Image 1 (cartoon, rainbow, N blue to C red):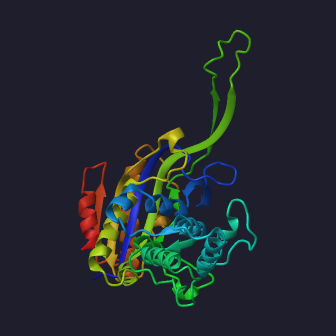
Image 2 (cartoon, one colour; image 1 turned 90 degrees about the horizontal axis):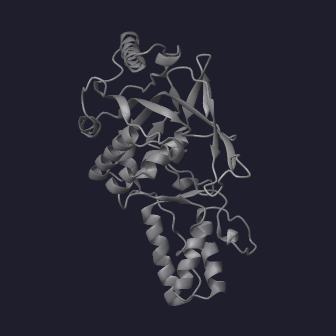
Image 3 (spheres, rainbow, N blue to C red; image 1 turned 30 degrees about the horizontal axis):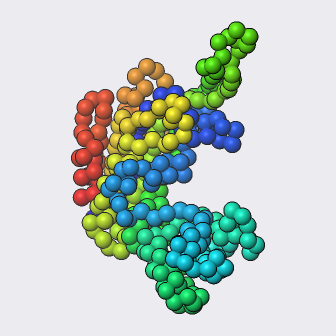
Amino acid sequence: MSRFVQIHLLVSYPPSNLNRDDTGRPKTAIVGDASRLRISSQSLKRAWRTSDVFENTLQGHIGIRTKEMGEKIYHALLEKKVSEKNAREWAKTTAGQFGKLKSDKKTENNQDLHIEQLAHFGPEEEAAIMLLVDKLATSGAAPTEDDLKLLRKPRQAADIAMFGRMLASSPAFNVEAAVQVAHAITIHKVAVEDDYFIAVDDLNRGEEDVGAAHIGEAGFGAGVFYLYLCINRELLFENLGGDTALAAKTLEALVHATTKVSPTGKQNSFASRAYAAYALAEKGDQQPRSLAQAFLKPVTGGDMLERAVNELTKRYKNFDAVYGACADNRYQFNVETGEGSVDELVKFVTE
């Protein structure tokens, strides 16, 4: 089995604001002395992990990221007729195994049941927590030290296996990510533009006030993005406890999500959903490398996608010429030429 699979994608987005900065405008980066639009890896992974593609393909094998597990435990205990005092105390004790709690004081919105940092719970851990809830409700006794040994090395959570997890208070149960995702950047320089818009009051007939009922402004940009992923298949297999079938399903879901699922930012305003226009996958045991260098010089001209494909092809061939073969096998599809298919890409990545 080839250890690494690298995937290079080109995706063209129309006017959009898929990933916002602290001012609400599209995120950017300076690359090759030119301003580019940027989509963070966190935004991309969040979109894929919560997509219908993942839910349908990996049902029962997706974890949950939350600070509010203590509140969930608390309500589950109340439903089983545990007293409010015991339910709160036991929920705090249980949730505290996954991180430091926010506060020791009771609050109206149950903030005292929340842990300070997001924790990613695997299906095994969720199941263990619910079994403990049942036990506590039946016995009426506080959880013992053995009861609270709830942390696991998740082997059934495909998203944790791919993207990892960090538990600052329990590093022994950290999981190293098997999939590395780069920030996506446009292959050309981009200027963020402003959309000035108004909203009209439907009941205002304009007899006294003919002005708009609301005025607003929103930033947007459009472009062709380059996205790079590196998959360590050996680590993914290990993270999933050696489950070959689940590893294959996980890779299948990842390929479909990365080629079809867009970040959700401002989708209702821009409907900027897009499929990948081009994909290049590489397999081998060689040290991985991005092809982002192909776009240090911004791509210009009318046929931008064709130029981008040519630049990627030139770059990997030049890498091969200088360093020796950087991959054992390659596969690509190209929507512009009708070459290849996503199903064949899945087969290439998983076989």
